[in-house]
Length: 226
Image 1: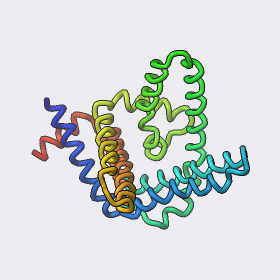
Image 2: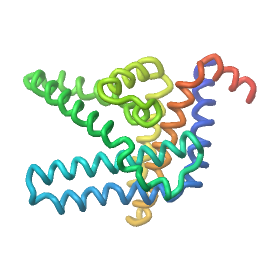
Image 3: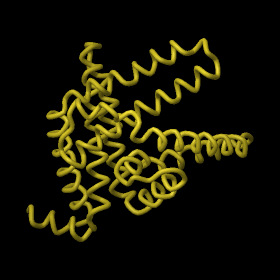
Image 4: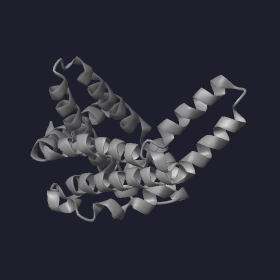
């Protein structure tokens, strides 16, 4: 069971580091709250424009995602991000996010059409897509992949590290689900923002550790720590 101890030790390092960085960059929680509401405001504003409005909302969404990736990327790679990094961050990964969104739409449309008469297979297909594309954000802002390569590299990453990656994602989702237990709505909103920042920072740190070290080196780290 040494592999299990190695994973627990890995999670301990990643979660502790993510917690420290999340507290240090508490304002990312505010950004995590503000960006989705900014998108909702823009979408409502451009809705009367029809197709053009939809395109503007899509570009806005991609720009906000790009900015979030830049900010989280600075925290994960350098341990530091500032509000000054927001300037210009909206275009850094804009093309990558738009390209991925379009390709994902194509893939989903083909899947929905091909499996329209097989509801169970459609569910399995959707779950497979969610699992094997779960590392796409990290592939974009840490792996610097774009286009079809994002799909391929995310699949290869999850296939190689699923035993370390997927349980961590489940833990993050369970933490996010716990927000509903916070009774005071404004406080729940703030907690949600902080947890979103913690989740993305943790995901990024875990991605880096898995892609820059081997299982043998992580076992060595655990033995030294013991």
